[in-house]
Image (cartoon, rainbow, N blue to C red; front, side, top):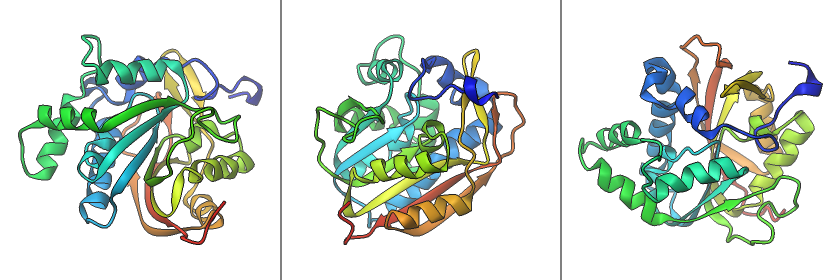
Length: 264
């Protein structure tokens, strides 16, 4: 992709429904859903069900209208706040929150989560519980020092970043700068749950290809260390599907704790 023609998730129009259809719909295929739905649900559930990550405020910065990584969070936090970069994805999310007839159907993800919990039923109740915990959907802007200006959010006990660092960063400098901005949303001593697509170059949403910053595990862990995070665990899902929609090698999930002495 010509650098002068790169399109970024946070600064260009995004077909939010096509994004969901391509990567999260049952029609995307089992291999795709294993990467985009099952692996994230497994990892967030595992991290939170251990019982040492909980509190009042959980902030989510996920690409598109993704809600399924939050199914576990509603059991451990009082308030969930969603940050979104564009109006299209805010509208998509609010359709689901308001049970709109045109809302994306997440039942396949919710059913998988309740099976993982060992219940195998009650997925509708789980979705309603999550909706009741989501207090706000806030638009954010990377150009601002305070991402959510004019709103000032409470610092989070836990911050989930899913598919955002690599889709909003142009190069190493902006990758580290963006990580620093996101980390400012988290309390000292708080936990970061981070999903990053590894060694990626582009992905498609609708008819257009959008930019990925090509990041590997070494850069990821080094950047976290520079921002005062101690990595507690790292799991990598290796790509299994072959598709023209996206180019990548795997998906990394990292659980890390922010240094309690960090004040920046």
